[in-house]
Image (cartoon, rainbow, N blue to C red; front, top):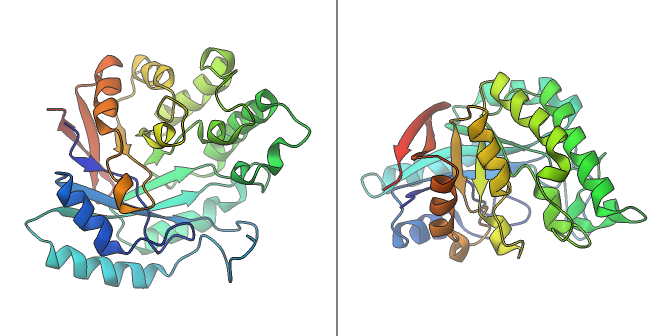
Length: 272
C-alpha cells in the first residue's frame, strides 16, 4: 500500500475550495500516514475569467502559519508536510530560487502548466493545431524550462497536456515522443531531481497515470530512483485516488519503494 499522498490542493489554490482541515481528515480516513499540501504558485499566470485578483498565487506567510497550527493539532495522527507546486516558465528561475530559499518547504513540485503563456486546460492551445503538434511542443518547452529553472524536487505530471487534447490519448504514446521525453528524463537525472506518479490521469479518463507507465518504466531504466505519488486532489474525495493502481504501476516498472521528502531531502518508503 502507498500511504503518502504528495500532490494535493486546498482553498489556497485558485482551482480548489477545499478547507485544509477537510483534506487532512479525508487522508486519515483513507489510511494515509503522511500527506504534503502542494498548493499552486504560478507566477505570471494569465488572467482567468471570473477570478478576481491574481490567479494561482497565494499568501505563503499565511500558508505556513495555518499549516503549523494543523501540524501541531494532528501531531501523532498524521504527518503533514509543507509543499508547493511551482508553475515553471523559463524566465522565472531567479524568482523561484528566491521564493524557495525564503521558506522551509519540505517539498517542491515543478510543473509545466503553460505553453507560451497558455494553459491547455482552456483549449485555446489546440485551436488550429493537432494534438501531436501541441504535445511535441510542450515536451520541448519542458526541457527548456529545466534548462532555466532548477529550484524544485520532482517534475510534476510530465504529460499533463494530454489530459486536455482534443482526442486526449487517442494518438499518444511514449514511443511517439521518445526523443523528447528521454531528453527530459535525462535532464531530470542530471539535475539530481525526481518525477512523480500522478493518478490524476485516471480521474480525467485517460486510463493511465501521468506520466504514462511507459515513461515511468523508462525513467527507471535510465537509473531513476526518486518518485513521489500524488492524486492531484482538489477535493477530499479525490485524495489517494486509485492508489492501488499506482502501487501496481510502480511494481511493474521495477520500483519497490516510493519517495517522500523531509526538508527537501528524499526519504524512501517501502511499498507494502
